[in-house]
Image 1 (cartoon, rainbow, N blue to C red):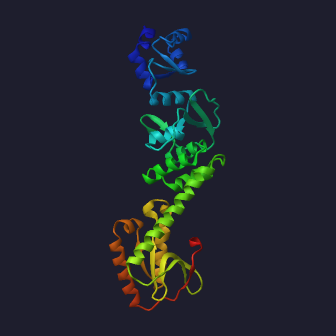
Image 2 (cartoon, rainbow, N blue to C red):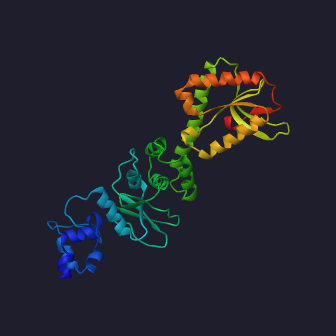
Image 3 (cartoon, helix red, strand yellow):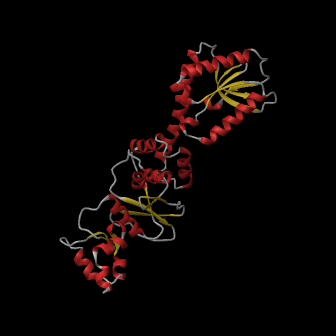
Length: 321
């Protein structure tokens, strides 16, 4: 009685999401190995996806079913990472990849089989459930994918897609790079450094254009400002030393380093306390409303002219070199 009920298709679908079942689980329910093998023959109703993993239909498996099969093969504690995890997270610019890369705890031993690539790790992250599948956090998935890629253009496209759409933060990527193996880390490291450098250069170029539109005297660019004892008060993108006007263009609008925003705010507070007039501009305003930035700079210039210049020292910032 139980045996007939267990073998009903609807009953099996309820037991095994996605119609993907471990062979051992089917045997535990009372089905013989020979019966399972018969059902998985060429014209049978089932299909073997990986040794020990059965699909309870005979059609072409979907990506979701292949993902489930890889997880079933990998066993307890497994999660999807790499290109497939990035796809599940919504990344669009990905290389073609038919395999499913899964992570398992380091103490477990499961071999890679067919399309299921199994990796043991001592740094197993907490999985995120997406559409019923345990998936590595996006930053980890991207770095795991990049470690196995050999084209800089592919790594650049994948990571840029994630960062520009604000699905992932470069700071998270750096953390994963530092925590993981150095093998295969060169390409993602190049891409992250390119992003940092590109944002700084883009903001600097936009600021220079807006500065010209303001018709103010030419400032010093990328300046360290220190107090009378030599202690660093802050680093500004532009500084008018004759009147003590500083212009700070912050990068957090690009979401590259949110910790930088807090640091910038503290620097502006120290500069203001020392008598420096500070005009703060988010980079997005440089692009979307340069006229407003020009107005802010001119107003700041007027305020600075009408007060005594601060007692500070300046020098070219090393970061600008």
